[in-house]
Image 1 (cartoon, rainbow, N blue to C red):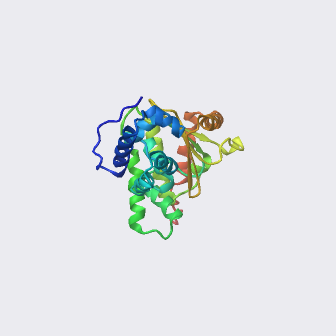
Image 2: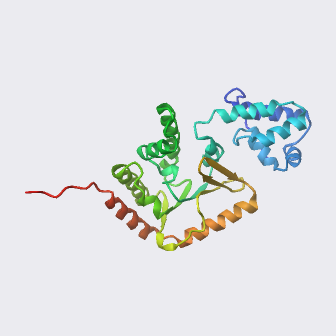
Image 3: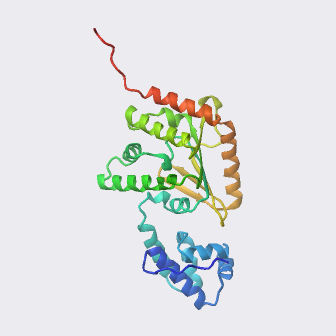
Length: 282
């Protein structure tokens, strides 16, 4: 059983949600395991909600209102929790789990993974997706994305393993200068032995995955997968589905170039981003 840590219920909407859940559960005389049985989840998951380490989901919040007879109390709190994220809405839940992950394995088909993005590259990506967004909003998203890279400062944890489709290193996002800087950042992280990076070359044919896919493993919780598409993101927690995603990722990883050859290909792509110098006329 996971026991909730002491929290200030007014520290955040999520902490308040957890405190209210614990209060109503105890008033109903239910253990975390018993409540989990009624919600078709584990008692440990209920404990994580109460400890504010997991973000509540609206469908479960509605079930809690039915179980406790609280009208729309938990539903309203859940909507409040969802409004206070700095991240893009589709990535909110995955971002919170990413912060707790022991290992993160990702396949990127179009863009450099968010954890590896530099500010100029991220700006180009966000602006392309949101061409009429306020500049302030774009800068908020950039700050949230680059802030995630703080975990790279730890020399050993979490384990970070990325497979990049060759398309990722060839597409000049933001222009040649921005792309050269971005690829140089990846090379530096590899040479510092902080991340493992492989490139899936065009020559491999059709990959086993066709979109951005992330697998996260935890110390004391089941693994999850996150799959992202245009304007959508899907967090997968069902063990059978996560296992299928893991198999697809393993197939992609097996087809990718070894890290040494991948590094050479990335450095070659960097050279292709060198600015063109007109020939001398003298």
